[in-house]
Image 1 (cartoon, rainbow, N blue to C red):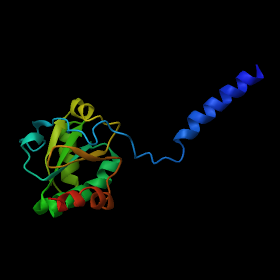
Image 2 (cartoon, helix red, strand yellow):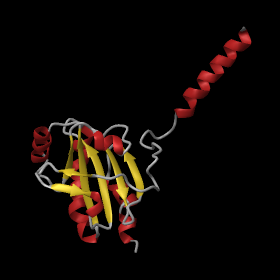
Image 3 (cartoon, rainbow, N blue to C red):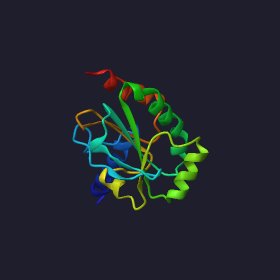
Image 4 (spheres, rainbow, N blue to C red):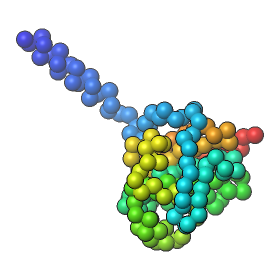
Length: 171
């Protein structure tokens, strides 16, 4: 009985210790190095967006909501990337998920205006298609339509420098 108890304790310790010390933003994705899922639909500004028709060399897809604190913190970084790297071939698109469009529009007004389009995803279907675990999450799509990187949590300018800029420099 003592041996069984020790074996049980060892198993629990093994399971818990395997996750400690890991970066929680590094979540394996079935989509990295695979074709990006489809993304098409109405946008918050009344237009439409279709990833398959985006002519950009690199597309940054950001899953966000107005009620998400880290989304508010990262919006200026994404807006700066959208404006500063567009001439080099970057397109940024949002997926506004599980949110009321009027709340998302108010969020964007508060942040200084909509700099890039956001596909409306009230029921979270696009977020599920993209395999998100939570928000924010960001995906980098190269010119072949392949997911090259994924960030769980807030995007920083250094992350964009590391994962986006090199793809813009290719070709």
